[in-house]
Amino acid sequence: MLYLIGLGLNEKSLSKEAIEILKRCKRVYLEEYTVDFPYTHQALIDEIGKKFVAANREKVENLEIVDEAKKMDVALLVYGSPLTATTHITLIEEAILSGIKYRIINNASVLDAVAETGLQLYKFGKITSMPSWKQSYEPDSFMEIIKENKSIKAHTLLLIDIGLDIKKTIEQLEKAAKNHSIKLNKLVVCQALGTKKQKIMYRDMNEIKEFTGVQKPYCIIIPGELHFMEKKMLERFN
Image (cartoon, rainbow, N blue to C red; front, top):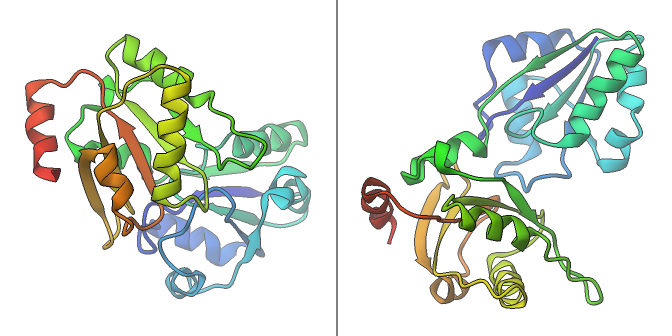
């Protein structure tokens, strides 16, 4: 059987049900290529009482884990919610095609936790992500999603690629906004939501760029039109 298990936002977020399942599994993998973890591997091992194998993108996407689930109980641990990444949906599709039983153990993710900013979840538009730019490759299609959301006065949740520090992120965002003739004002930066390192900032882009202390994982919210209660809540994070 194949289990996709959400870790939630900190090392203590696993449910009792998830820990009981992990005790039964012959093999446990940790998907580690989509997020900068806010805790160490050892901290997670201490919580679940079992060692695991770190799985990179190739390991997950070549569907070896599904093949192993034909012979034994296998679990894939995923930070936050287990089905946020499209790769993980592919695992389920392959399990169905192969006649392999599977279970999803859900958990909290950044998509829930951003509500702590005071922004209303139903006012968010499409989610998008910023990749890390290379010297000869600067993809900025995420700005089209921001533009679309702004056109309907919706907030945008911008997920940040693994490894990108806040200074580089803001530099890329500034350049991309200029390329698309989009004016960005104050942004919300959410650091390590759901952990002891959690921090929320609501600042101008220039202020954020100078603040080098933002720890990973973090995300950025580009606010749309603010309800007076949202504005009041955000002002706490100035």
